Length: 228
Image: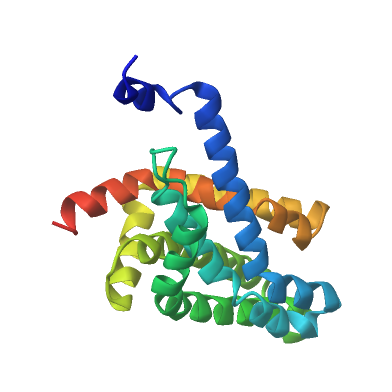
């Protein structure tokens, strides 16, 4: 058997590919955890009190760039098993996207902090009940928007204003993506309520992978219509 044939067959088995995928996911999860250590430490130390909502939002600032780097690394995962470099791809994505991600992530967190404080003090404000429901709906819509914006910023070099417009456009344009991300949001909220923020952090790589998978129709249309 020639060396070329042997090289071609090496690593093409199911077990080899499964091992490579597991290695990639575990590496990305480890780097995600390293990147969000300040967030986890801050959230663990904070009491679950309404007055700490702005501080909790501030603690979540590192999460945006870390998720973006994970999406970037997963998208660029090499099919060549001899060229597995998920750590290099993660840090490349982190450095390339951190500024762009923070431009969309920071205003979103600030808005969530406002909503959280408003809901926590809703009884004292004397506002009608439908106003609280409206705040929740707007917060959910903003979260679905930032999910789209995070994927777009992670994979493409658009201006922040264009990212904002595209993220809004695809909320209605790709309802399957929006519904899938809504399911992820419900799952993340459920894990946090039942377990803790730390438990959700341990599933961060799975959340990033699911977000990328959900976004495939949006990614396909962006590449077809907006990157050529």
